[in-house]
Length: 122
Image 1 (tube, rainbow, N blue to C red):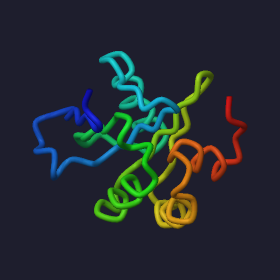
Image 2: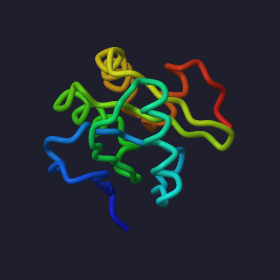
Image 3: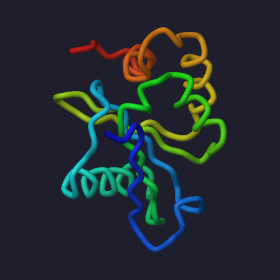
């Protein structure tokens, strides 16, 4: 099992595409239909038409890993997935998210994000 899976959505090299980190409780990957849903959601919410590099996997649930990735790529978007819904987190709160992740390294990124967004865990 890969700790972090990267799926490009176009011809732009991964290091030049807009990073999107999908955080699920179990660190699950998304299928093609799920990836299209994420692309459509980012377009609808933020007007993004550029190529994306979509990251999934259990490795993103390590708070220090996600914090490091967000600090390296400040243009990243976070997608927080629950059983009932998906939340699109804008770039302008990445530093706050990083601070929350840094302060809570003993719990998963998913839990930190749920608390940061004031959602109840399922």
